[in-house]
Image 1: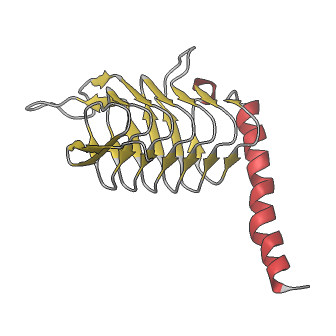
Image 2 (image 1 turned 180 degrees about the vertical axis):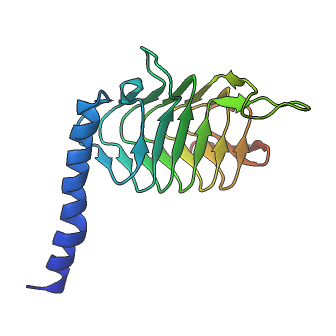
Length: 190
């Protein structure tokens, strides 16, 4: 048996089979999902609050993390054909909504809420301020980017690696920095 075939069986086929089981298990626990999604090893909670479209890929270390509280609606809504690289975290207290055909680099963090703070107040006792995050279609979010509450990214946005996005940007914006600012607008190629 050639070495490549052994590698394919052990490394690829076993991951695919485990992913299929994981999708079935998530659906059994209440997650709404479309067809042909891939979930490598990661963590989710409050699965009834998550909706995933079709043909999405979540690589190792992902966290889909609605707040641990009862809620009849959805806190995380993901469209179709999205790719989430290693250790992507979606931390939802309000609503995180992601469109179609987006790519997220390793260690991306998306949160729709902020902790409050003040003199003499323990951060664990201070209330959260909840908002939303909306990411359009065909966006590319680079490695280690952070997208915070009340941000809306229009279709075709590019977020450079390591950026901290605190405000919204229109379609086709290329943004970067901490805090992120618009670097330029993508133009159609002739």
